[in-house]
Length: 104
Image (cartoon, rainbow, N blue to C red; front, side):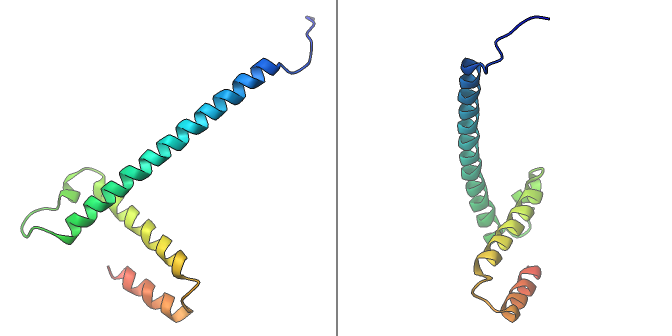
C-alpha cells in the first residue's frame, strides 16, 4: 500500500477556495445582468400593453416564449407587491385586492 502524508493539501484547498470565489463572482455578475435584462424586457412589454395597436397582433405574442415569460413575470410582480403591502392591509382589503388582480 502506498504511503502518503495524510495532512490536507493546503495548496489544493487554496486553489479550490479561489475557484469557488471566482465562480461565485461570475454567478453574481450573471444575476445582475439577468436582472437588468428582465427590467428592460418588463418595461418594453409594459409599454406594448399600454399602447396596443388596433388590428395588429401584439409583438409579445409574436415572439416565441415571450407571452409565457410576461405572464409569469406579471404574476411574480403581483405576489411581490401583495407580500410588501399585506402587513398594512386587513384581510378584507387583501381579499378585494386579490379579486381585482385576478380579474386582470
